[in-house]
Length: 532
Image (cartoon, rainbow, N blue to C red; front, side, top):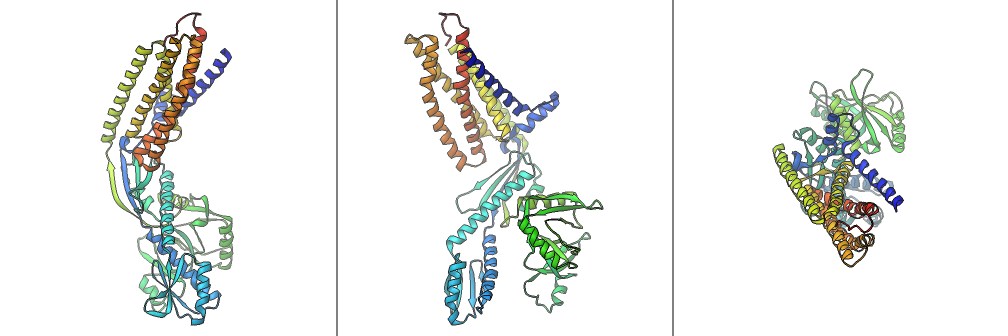
């Protein structure tokens, strides 16, 4: 028995030490201890103040981009099959096909069925010699939902890369609203974060066909007002603030999607000027090497969000590694560009529906009252357990204190933020912990009144109470899981703290409390009553 108690006691001590390290780290002095606690115990928006944003994702941009791709691919498919015809987009979900010989429409229908299953071939209203490719409603909904999900993931990566501790990103509104709520605790000057979140971040490398031109009008005039096929004009802003224009291929050589994960890093050139180095995937690097080999001596425009950053001359073959050099880069802008590229491009633009800064005074007031309520309630519970259950009350109090330590440590390890509802979850956890101890202690009392010896009464008390305790905890965790799944930031904070507290309570009220009882039983004199 003593060996069993010793091994279990060692496990409890290890758990306590791990929890303490999670909360305070390994400080060398008092100052570092306080700093570690502040860094590890994160507070949510309602307690620390910060910025509250509601964003709308314009998923129609993704639909529009998908139909642009479909137009190019369909025209290429017709050309490969030697089918004459003209392909023109009339709106984001409809593509007009005309000038197709009558005997080729069956071949066009087969092409749509086999390769463009997201579209339906329909007669063109008012034009019996034309047809319309109409995007299926289900395909449009799928593109919109995928764009929304990808935008949310991209924004989450950008916020995390900025190091905003305790940030929360969740759906806002009902299904089909495509709105997001972003909570940024302790961010009271959100301009920089807003700019990073909103930036589309689409990087492209495009071959230059002409320029630079002093103005867009001058560029158009050089081609008699009609640009060559498959080209477009893009601006570049130089250090002086003036704008020049480049004629570039409309199809990019490579894009930011060809970067390896975290493949962009801020750096400096040989003259100490900020730039960004990048590493491509194997397929992207092979494609880039082939294109640059074929175009040595020509300019290659580096384009971010449809604006040329620089247009260096290709000096030699470039493989998987390269550098983005912009004459207007600063250390901050180079760092921002690397962050954008690593987090991925937004699939659609976003706009701000609401932008609110919550003052810290509200957080201080909430913390004061919340902590005050916790302390008063906790002390009252500890006192009650000591008075009502006597010696066993010490057992319950130790288990409750350890329960709180484990909860706080788990939040610190998982970088979870305490919110005001989260504090309510802590208080409810304490109540559940007391309930577990009451169930065990009352069952032990029943066993003692039935005439059983203290060791048998303790064993019977824990054995019979365990099923009830497990049932109550499982049902409460299930309810918390529903709150976490469908709730927003504060509600999810409540669900998280409650779930962690309940799991910790199973360990403390059943395992730790039993070890303490077993230790007391081995030290009591034969025939002595059990204080419970």
